[in-house]
Length: 363
Image (cartoon, rainbow, N blue to C red; front, side):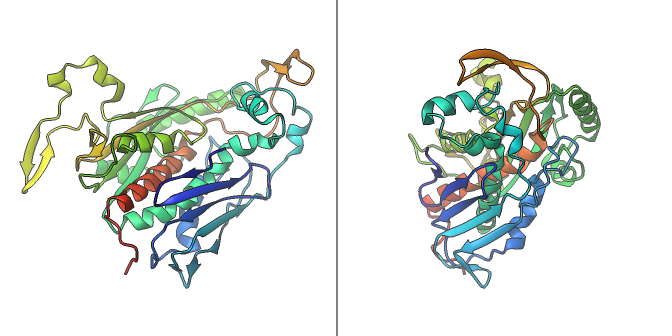
C-alpha cells in the first residue's frame, strides 16, 4: 500500500477499522505552530460516528492524542504522531462472514492483492474509519493555512438526488453547521432528512455530492505538469474511500458549453486581476489563479446495507446471499464534509510550502 501523501508536508496514515488505533504521522510541519489536542478534537467531533441521523450508531469517542512533535502547545519541527484509540469495535459481526464478499466493498480486490491476509474486520485499511486520521492531520494543516489567509469550507449540496439551491459564501458559513446534514439550504435539508429516514427504514443507503470551497488562495499554487493543483487535490480526495468523482468549477457541464460561454473574462478590481466568472474553479493550467477554488465531490451510497444481496463465498467458490449485520451509515455524506475539508487543507498546505508561502518557523 501507499500510505503517505505530500512532498514537503507529508502525512502517513496508519491503523485499521477494528484494530487498536488509527491515526496519522505528519512530517514537515514547520516549528512554532500553536496547536493543541483541543484544536484537533474540535474537527474530529464534526466527523465522529453517532453524531447525526444518517450515521452509524457505533459509539466512538474519537479522542485525539498527540504522541510526539508538540511541546508546550507548539510544534517542534519533529514528526507529529496523532493517535485515536478504537474503543467500540464489534468485530464479531464480521467473523462468520469473513469469506463472503460484500458487494460495493474492497473485499474481493483486497483478497486478490493481499492473498487473504488483510484485516477483514470492518474493511480494515479500506474502511471510512481511517478518515478520522485524515481529519486530525487536516486540523493541523488548517492551522498552518491560517498563516496565509486561506480558508476552507465544505457543505452538502445533494443527497439522494435532492439538490440544494446555490448559496453565497456568507450563507454557507452561517448555515452549514446548524443542521445535521451540513447543508446551507434549510428547505432542501428537510427533504434530504425525509429521504434518509425512508431508505434507512428499508435497510438501504443514499449517496450525494459535497462542494468544497477555498478562499484566500493566492495565484501561483501548483507544480505543473504532473503535480498540478487540480491533480494533487483530486489524488487526495480520491483517497477518501467513498469518493467516486471529483470536478472543478463548471466541471462536466463545461463539456456542454461553447468556448465563449466557458471562458472566464479577466478584469481589474482594486488593483488586482480577477475573473468575472469562475467556470475554471480557481485553476488555470494546473495553477491557482487567485479566484476561490471550487470543487465538487461525488460520494457513493454506503455499501453496507441490510438488504439481501447476491454475492460469492470466496473460500468455497459458491454463490450465496448476504444480509450485512452490524452498525452502518444510511448516508455518509454529512460526515464526509469535514474529511473533504481536511484533504483540501493537507494538499494546499503542501503546495503552499513548496511555493514558499510558509516559513520553516512560525513566529
